[in-house]
Length: 395
Image 1: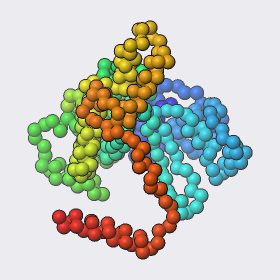
Image 2: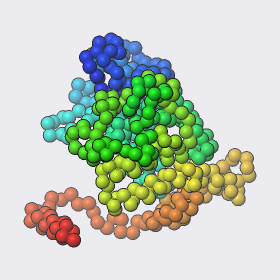
Image 3: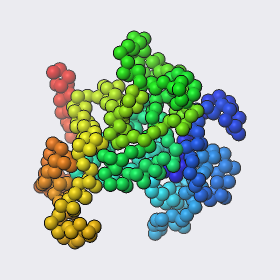
Image 4: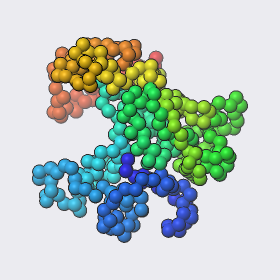
């Protein structure tokens, strides 16, 4: 990430030139790493009414030429109605999270696509199961952040430090990473994360809970019943003392929890699945994914990087001189392929998860035909599934 650009909800009618009335805005203290900007771009955006944080982000993208230019998409592009030139700058700025503005709609019938945040930090895994597990976890985590009003901000200097630490050997099991201590909004006190702060999550460990709160929390409709005033008015309030808002945690603590103030990302996902009343079949599959990720975070299962390193070091042709010969590289790629296809099971990598063999048999026997179906045929198919649905309801 180069800069934070989210500004939160403006509370009150404060002076735009001051902090008055902007209590719910993300503090610029998170942007603690100076970034070079293209000054004329920044000034043009500010004159057009764009806020300073977003202006800085965009101006930073324009400090260089695009990395990719497509033939036939230079002079031929009309910048008044198309965004290809913008995306050639935006999309080649390889970061772990990317802000994606809505694409233009060429006609009223085009689908509406809103503002998006793209998670881009995951590396491809050896098996479909692993890819599915991390993808499902990432998607669920985005829902958790929105539904529970969570704040995961830490200064960008700490984000960069985490990326550097992640490159260390066995970082997933042995490393420490900066992470926000209190994800939930303020509940009492006004000193941010100082002595007066009480985490909303700490109440989950208390034996007594207000029956009034329990009744209100069951309402998931449009009402604000059961949602504290602080969550309604300042769902992303960073607090006044940011020096105490984050700490170093092991990956197992980030995923599984630490103390009574930090519940862990995996328990939060489980809580969200309870919150939406996830069906048992889907929940069973997701539990398998979450259990796998938990074992990776605790070191019970090794990461792909650790397994590859161990494979090379134990290869008969390896001489302990940091030289990976063609023979070793070939055998490693062949083994990775066999693991991905389900031909070889590696317990230290996948635990008791057995990958079903992936074969090409029958893969291309049925074409995805795009020929329009006749009305009668469509009705017959719909009637069949309508009958199936009715029978399942009766059972």
